[in-house]
Length: 496
Image (cartoon, rainbow, N blue to C red; front, side, top):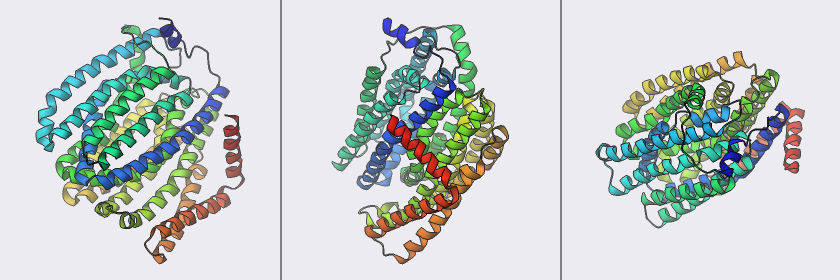
């Protein structure tokens, strides 16, 4: 009982704006530094898995994961996000009410997945191994729900040093188990066992780092207060889910597992720079922006810096990836099977570039309480996705679906314009300069690729050339500001 009381008042001390800024910077460094290696592990594992597995096997995992993610939406009504965003102190009633509601919803969802299994089996022609994966992924939702409250408590304190550790363990164990079993020929079962190992290990570790005694309870006033933010937030989440995982479920019936596998491969690689760099920033900026709601100048600076950080790293990564991908499919053994997805990779790259700008902005809208703005944007993107992607997929196959995604991504210009009216961030410095430097880098790299032979040595030369040119052009365009920011980051690292 002592642990419950302590947990309910973990954020009882008011955090000043200066402390929020310092913890936000520290959090970005912590998440970026520690998860950079993990993202590299993810990509290496993904590369190996797509060597050992064929497009049908990978497509089944991608497809079934989308189905389970769709169900996962209904396991929450935005209460966890409401706890993080809440200005006032979080109480024991808030925590127990959230936990109770989540467990009830999870129970209903697990029953629904079990009852709908015959339908999924017929629709996607699932074998027994794929059905087992479906059930294990569904069970992992229950394990994930048990981690919600400890995660919220850590996130409200911006204690990302502890929050990132379970992710490290989960990522390493999942990838090691999945790759090893795929290498041994376990096929889809490789994912089934890896998902189970991931869920159990993460659950145990987060309770070690942030003890909290689960307890059931229900406070009507607490629930009503949390739902004021939670429900609009969750509606936006549902629209995002409908736009992404929902469309994947439909594409499974149009393109089949092999087509979804090719599409998933292209999307995974194109979004890899976002996972490397943007996710860490978003994780930190949501609670940080929430506490800057009353400081407009500080919010403008924070938004500008967040967008610049993401674009500065994502834009050149995308250019480099799209340049070397055709070479990699030729020089890596058993990787030529993914060459039909190269066009889709380029089109998803367009989507990723726009996401690097708009995701921090929509994150800002939600953090400062302008959830209606985010909702309207999500409606626009969802409608555009469902109008373009399935139709183009029917007419043009995998590349048609990717064309649809690129068109939807281009519509993000509307979101940028709306955001600029609310928070006049420095678009030229945050977006324009990294974009121009990336274009110059891209032209140089394409020229080099046209004269170099196809080999691993050529890939290494192209990567080194691209990094060098981008660094030089960035210094010319940004100059002292870039050096000053680098010094700030370095000093922050030394103080950690």
